[in-house]
Image (cartoon, rainbow, N blue to C red; front, side, top):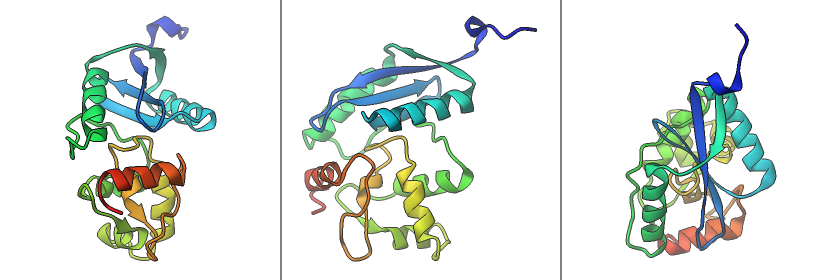
Length: 176
């Protein structure tokens, strides 16, 4: 049987989300949000290629209820009226990466931890470099708060979208 692109069962919808830090691209499948990333051509293309492969899906621009709710919740977040997001998330990565990202979801609004503490929390105390790398592969910025992880020395190390965005988010949350 020949594969026809119109027979693809899975769809990843994408939409542009405007934020005070610049536009982001959101992606969603029927189970929930699978991507929210600041626009950077190399990152977005890589994220979408990975998602297309994992879900054997077509990517189409569009709107859905997830994006409506996402825009509303992000607006509230940037207005300091929301501390927690309630959207369903679909984390896409290796089992190790997913465990790292699930740990990110436990960091309370307005608080930070170090990569070392995060590694200890997932019972891999010597894997802090691997944890930092996994954080860097997070495709759901802000909702999966990798910006809340800082260096052991308190410095704002690493953030794929740029340190200035990380600093903005941490200041917004009152963490610095």
